[in-house]
Length: 458
Ligand SMILES: Cc1cc2nc3c(=O)[nH]c(=O)nc-3n(C[C@H](O)[C@H](O)[C@H](O)COP(=O)(O)OP(=O)(O)OC[C@H]3O[C@@H](n4cnc5c(N)ncnc54)[C@H](O)[C@@H]3O)c2cc1C
Image (spheres, protein in one colour):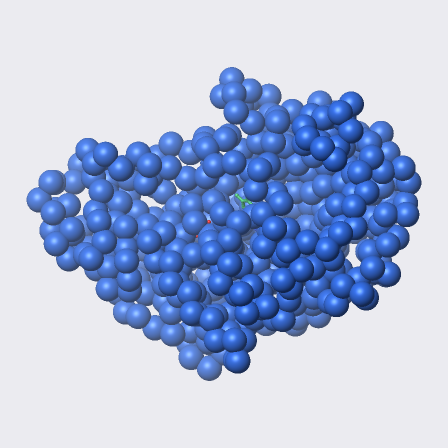
């Protein structure tokens, strides 16, 4: 247990608040997106700037306290929070400055996807991000970051121009192609292993305010044909098209026919990130295939598109995810997916596939620490539910699905989407870059101060 006087000492050195377990806001501040995570830090420091972060890193080192870092608190493994740790809570750090001429954004570490889209879209610009508004920019970027603009403009990390990092010995450094280039390489895919990133500088792209979108739903019994069609469609799709095939429950509201409400279905979501008039021809084949129950190719505000998965991923529900990469989407892989769907447990469950071509593949595979560019598809079984008594059954279903798909997977896993932070997954997450990352870890964090994460041992 930490002495009261010790907590007071930290509080005196900070501009932000320090919360002990007795504080009325402690439970709220320690909670993260996944309701299955229930960890109790010794102290929570709600940092307002770089000075607070440096003070916390020095304090944790001096008092031999475990340190955890919370960006947006959305990692399914709950690695933002550790038992008996000092949690550096970056969520008050919300500053964003957009330079519309240079098409760049300077973004503090507590910003979410929704915050950044809001600030960039007013200038008709966007950074390639993920596609749920509450997700933190921090974790997203450090792990890679895949979303609706990825095939056109690459991963979130591919659009990082520079970062400001507080190191394990309490210094502030800049990382870019020309400053601390090893660190810059490592933080684009190597997770939060190398320091506390306090700010990111992103390249922005012209986009919106409206983009052409497709949202097409088919009955579950057509899943095999729809997934084959999706594969063939994406084989020739221009880079402006990023598209997901998603198995999910049909929302209980119009325009969905009542007989499908709450039932599992297969859907195709797509975004065309070029001019809408070119997008019509590119997306049209999606609406011409099969017998969809809902068939919409419509222009939509980009910020609305970016929130379209929010209702299916509420904070505080229970989640267990598996995330893998497929070499390709073979007929056998599709048949296996179809055979594993039932019983499709959990109200918030989705199974999602995304083709990984375009700008993701064109980037040199050794240019950043993200190691999965050779994969054909990102493949995720994301289960979500409310009743704790269903935990075992649902975890078993997800694990069984994963095992059945093993013959088709690359062995790599998305560091941003692994439900467990157990050491055995780190190799799969960092792949062929693991050794180089470990070497950089030895330079920047030789004593493994930053280890509440998918850890790279120094
Ligand atoms: C609903 C939902 C939708 C998602 N959609 C997508 C998607 O479309 N595309 C995609 O690629 N991913 C997606 N993800 C995964 C997401 O990218 C990861 O969960 C990501 O880690 C979240 O970042 P965070 O800052 O919110 O997480 P946190 O839980 O706060 O942090 C995650 C990890 O990063 C470390 N970390 C956080 N901030 C910092 C920092 N500033 N410096 C150093 N280390 C830090 C933490 O220690 C922790 O280990 C989604 C997740 C959810 C829950």
